[in-house]
Image 1 (spheres, rainbow, N blue to C red):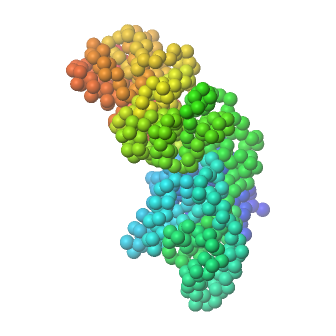
Image 2 (cartoon, one colour):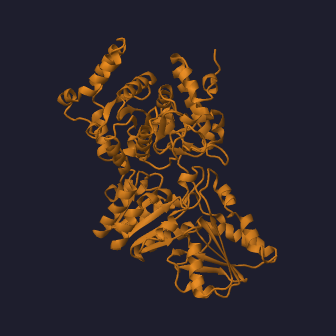
Length: 620
């Protein structure tokens, strides 16, 4: 009798999956699910989506060679099984940890990872590019894009499908249909996929024909290919609602049971025979094999460390996100013009309470940040007060809409920018460090950066009522520092917390906690510092530079990208004002790998120890 993990532990490369006897595949899938639950319960990460994609990943590696073929995962958070089966099973305990493996595909980590992925709806476009490169370079092999039905709520997916369907390249799009993205799917794509699920007679008939032709020597496969490519007229006669994938130029196969490895392999073999753009539509259950996740896949989408024997309970510890959710709900009760918008992140941004209480005033656009901004701008032009709650990293996808569809008309929308600054675990693709540099290039934009919950409430009201244009309130993941909880909110653009030394330290947001800790330790060592906190970080008060000219040294500490950050902006203003002292910027110089918030602060020199050394280096 095999040990409970003997099959998975024996897989050290993708080729080992192909060598396994068919009869052990169900056991392998069971082992993978057990390992997933064990790993993610310790490291945190994306669980439900990976549990639902086990058989699909096994089938992909049975039918394709990830070193010769190209497998592109959409979003990428469902790549854990793929990592296990491509030589990284022994490293899974390091998932999302400093120095460990990433929770997303990364070519620097393995040659089996083809593309850096962390945002939605990109796989078809990238795979289209890979397939075209193979064709132009006369390379063998296939390109496979694995995209979820939730990602079809993003417009880029359709741009990719439109172009790829006309390519005639060896491109296979695997549509993983689990009827749920992070939040419930919305819109036309979900309704259309539902209609496609009514074709089981057609699939059974096609599979029977395939089996028959494959057993005919020599001419069987060519005849089967001719049959598949020539029967569209018959399908249109039988099925009036022909798949829109076929209208785009794809051959459509499906729906297939996504938890039947043998059916999946047969579908992939059919797609290979066709040698043209193909959509393989599979149906899976998100959270498959773990009762808690099957019942509540949204809660188990992204999790922190948990007890796998008990269901997850909502956290009782307040966070910036939960305080925002409570405050926007409260403000909307007072003002019926306030509407909320989320891009498939209702729970992540804590807007579910608002959505449940006032569904007519809260809108989920799906994974469509670009549309969400223009939608908000249209509502603003119509007299509403729209608040778009979005993670910093995902707001990057809507720059054009912020500039052209909103700012140029000076329409008033509010951006509640969640996960601003260093974000633990998810690594390079999810760090919230670029929103400030790109927002400061957009006209008619105001940015607030609360350090505490009380300031978040105040700034949200300021953003709604005190300014015009785009008003952004950016706040980090997690809770407030206990050391800052008693800080009195100040409506002014900045607050001089103390004025005790010739060195002035300027900062904003939650980094104030580290700055004050370092300043207090410096004071104990006899070094006095002046501290200035920015409340409205952009635009900077025009009179501020003149008030800073007397300081011998100014240090600007910023939890964000240095290039284009507020520190560089103030530097240019000081130069214009004639400042002759020393000016130092401590900010983030590069994207961060997976790490905790504390480790990210240490990596960038923004922890209290590093700041203390910086503040006192010329005064010792």
